[in-house]
Image (cartoon, rainbow, N blue to C red; front, top):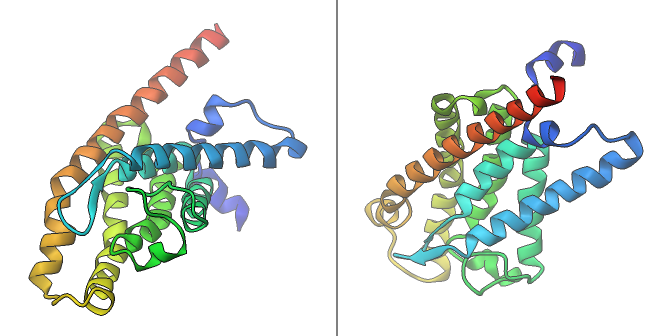
Length: 211
C-alpha cells in the first residue's frame, strides 16, 4: 500500500531547503522545524485586535505557511505543540492570557482547529498545490475554513454555558464568522503569494547548483 501512496507525496519547502538528514539526525531536524513553526505562529498571534469575543490575528497566516512549509504531519505536530505550550502557560496565544484556563476562552476552539488546518495545508503542499498561486489560494482557503468548523461551535458553547450570554445563530455568525471572511481571504492570498515565491527561490538555487 505504501508503494502506491508514496508517489502522490512531493517534497515540501522544508525538504527542499534542507539537505536530507541522516536517520540519526532526522528526529532532531524535524523537532527543530516543529519548534520553528511554533515560534512563527506565536509571533503572528501577537499581531491582533479584537472586534468581539474572537480576535483577528495573524495566526491563520502562520498556520497556513507552517503547514505548507513543513508538510501535513510536521505542520500538525507544530500546531499541536503550539496548543500545548500555550496551555502550559507560555504567552503564545493572542493577548496576554495563557495556561489551562484558556480552554474556557471563546477562541480556544479555533486554536484546536489550527491543527487539522495545518495538516490540510500541508496535504495540499505535498501534492504541489503550493507552487502555483491560484492552486495555492484554493488550497489555503480550504485550510482556512477548517478552524471555523471547530471554533464556531466551541465559541457558542462557551458564550452560552460559561459566560452566560444569549446565543443565537445570527449572533454566532456575526461574532465568529462574518467579520473574519475578508481577513481570511487576504491571509490566504498572502500565503498563496509568499509560498510560491519561496519555491521560485528554491528552483533558482537548484539551477545554480546544477549548473
